Image 1 (cartoon, rainbow, N blue to C red):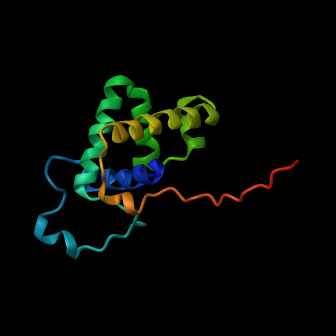
Image 2 (cartoon, rainbow, N blue to C red; image 1 turned 180 degrees about the vertical axis):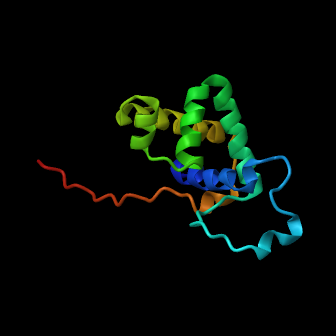
Length: 137
């Protein structure tokens, strides 16, 4: 079972870089690997996965642009929930609740279409150790 927050973190890093722009690249293709990235790097997804998640984001944008904006603020711009609440003039609890709703929509889109992402092997939910309880009689 995939962890949608990890998927969105990788997608957000991809979208914040060159992957989110379908227009011209910011650097010539031959020189891209020569420059050292001075910013702290985040794990990214591949282009195929990024485009799949972006298409789910477009579906969300058609249904509820506000929720889509929340996901973009949190995962692309890496804003904290508390800072988002201040900027939007709502409590951070409301932001967190709405973020969960938006994450659920994206997860649902991917689940309904039964899409397998390349990053799924890195984005699995951690299994919770279940300890069997003794039956009390």
